[in-house]
Length: 182
Image (cartoon, helix red, strand yellow):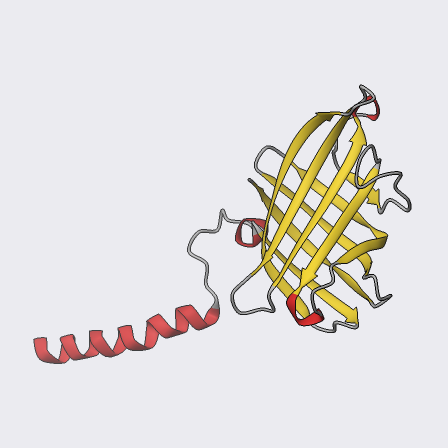
């Protein structure tokens, strides 16, 4: 009888364990989808690049005093691919004079023109280096980044941008991210 019970238990475990994993049962129900997605992004692209990009994303916030004495609040998003996706890196800077408040939830548009390379600007500046597209970097030309949530540890949002290189080749990118503090 004990041999039958042992065999029955083994077979039950061999059947039950895969069913639990296949069904997607979650053992810790206090975790949210953002916890699972934390520190990651998934973007869709179209144009010269037509695929999904995913990877790890983190952010940092700094305050800078410019040469003219004006203080700017800057949020830096750094994105790097996961091993299984195309090699790429992206960085986006959101800058705003502190006289207008700190960077918080809201919509931030791409800066149309700069007087100098990312100095004293109010808005978003960004670039992407994607290996399959060659050596020329792509710069954000239009679009916006929306921040839907921000705290000391995480920042969540979406982006919808058009990026273009010096040869006038472009691609659109959009998707969601949940960044962790660097």
